[in-house]
Image 1: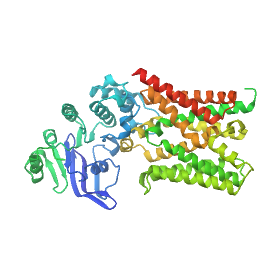
Image 2: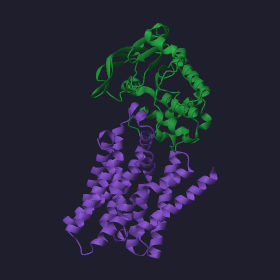
Image 3: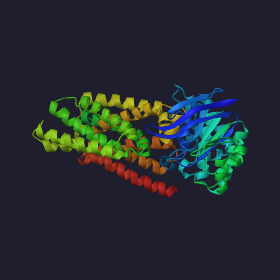
Image 4: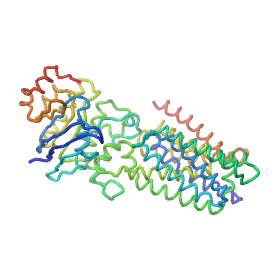
Length: 235
Length: 269
């Protein structure tokens, strides 16, 4: 079943067009990797899918009871977060915002969901630790747990392994793969083409050479073969 | 305690200290520490206008003008040509100059220097509050505290990660408006206690002290409220005992508390 259908999207800001005529769809349980040069509109596409900004043209259709606010989003870390005085539990709990509605405080179900997702990502032991005292990989797990509290269906990950060392990067990929295996659709922006191709099912390549299709087709496409030859570390 | 003015001073002092500390953490984390300072200068300018017109209830004018500027500053922060700190500096210095000019051109009393000094540093103002001002302060403080508790979870979410909050459908723009308005109310209230130049100290110090020791948002917020109230009480009492200016005495107490918290934090590690 198609959860997300984008037709003829045109992305950018008032006077700058970053990408034009994008059409693609995402199936339930899919693992889509968005790759491309810096400035090709990867983050803008993600912000547009989340309704944080409007597309200049085109339509986005959400199916399967999916709405923009029931997508779990893992944004890139901000400087503010790096020294924020908050416990891990508080951060994960803030993932339940979309179930607050008109309520002022989080419900028992929300708190149960937090415990479940902390368990799922193996961060239960840190619940009372201060977020700013964790390592980069641990912080990403916390933010991933927060994203899981916001969704049952789809995760949008904006460079989830940026700044992590190789070992932790692998763990992160395995973790995301495991979540995908549990039926959660994954859309991920990545600079790390080699790994993207290893785990993803579909690839969306933005930039001069547009590509959308399966990983296998991507390997043989002009855009893909060029990037993969570059050792997968194109920045 | 026998004198009503001391009682008023203590009640208002405690409430203002409580309110100003609540938003401290949010302002520090959002890199808005100087907004309080900028707004207090705006409030000073508005105060001068009120004095020139001869308004007896000066808050009636200073409050709306300050709220308006707060909203303008936060709004412009998102999509203006003049960015964040420059906009704050511009508005705050402009208002200060404008206010001082007004006070000199249309002197409301013979003692201009005294008027200016008491607006800037609070001097003995807290001890000369009228009953109306006391009631207004109490009402506004209660509104601020209730709003803060009611929106606590959303405030946390929007401060920690605005993009995420917006993505999951939280109304971040509206919340930023509410935060701006609350800051403005706190600034106008706190001017009565410590004067416009020292308002920021009241907002920032308890939060910074608390962040030295505590690790969760909730404990940081609760402790900074407690600390702020304690320092305000101590400061007011000390200033009465030693006949020192109320505002600066409270701020010095806050600074000493910050020093102690730094030490405690270092030992804990």
